[in-house]
Length: 109
Image: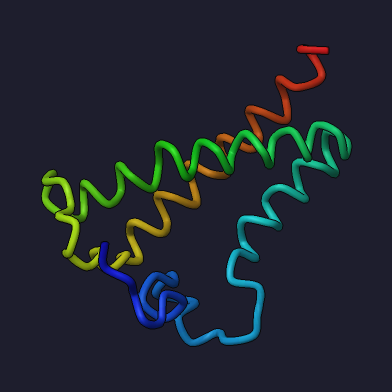
């Protein structure tokens, strides 16, 4: 398995690649916090967990497949660079997932 020498620079969002020492996922955290203000901290925490799982299990792999032309990545191939458009799509999917999960969480208990 290939190891990336400096994974932070290689895999960081393009708009945040040079933001060393800062919270790289600040827009995503703010989205979850906004849902927490509207629905409460418990719903916010549940929504954050659900959105994180959806992001890493569904959204990111589909984004990588899309950026790679629909082909699976080979073991030694570098990850394709994340375009600003892909970042916006991931952020919108994250936002929708957080707000829907936060809205549905109080009804599940």
